[in-house]
Image 1 (cartoon, rainbow, N blue to C red):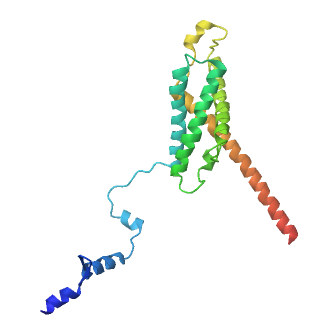
Image 2 (image 1 turned 60 degrees about the vertical axis):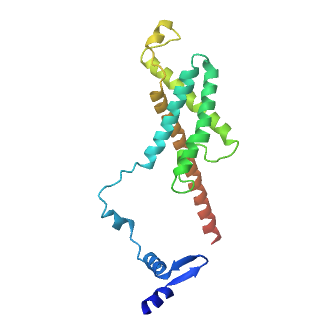
Amino acid sequence: MADNKHNKDNISSYGNYKLKKNAVDRLLDAKKAPEVSYSEIRKYTSDKKFSIPSWLKIIFIKFWFAGAVCYFILWGLGIYVHGLDLLAVLAIASGLANDLMVNKLLRGFEPREREYDRWMMVTVRKYWSLFINVLYSGIVIYCVFRTYFALNVLLGVDANADASAAQSMLGVEPLLFGLLYLGFDMLFITIKNTFIKIFQDAGAKASCTNTGGQG
């Protein structure tokens, strides 16, 4: 009889459901257990995860999208569009890719807000940022084309002077195009970041000077 009374005390009714108090108490006690640090858990794990550095992911994303633009746009439309028209189409495609995909991907996996600003030329997300990205992409692509021309000149190939030499000239393909685009992109971003740091340091120095003068 005593056991039955004890069991009834540990069971409470709620509507048509019966709630076992002992089970609830055990769950609450389990939640009160001391937390175990991640480093402590790692001691008992057999496999160690291989983590890819963030900078390598960013470099690959930029390279891949630049190569994709070359593959789908330059190779796809190269036989129909030429000269400045082709440069404009490539600039628009690259600007769209940077503004709508590359920068959005970087924002998606950055550990803290605006952590990856140093990897972007245009760090704001506004309607006008798309036009800035298109103009910037046009400058980068122009530099890439001039580099191809310079490389062919160094190789002794000038298709403008000799039409038969076009067969032996260095052609545009996604891998080298992606590397050149990435190189100029990072060069211009580094220059931008350098100027920003110079202005920030100058502003901080001027602020300290004004504070010291007032003191």
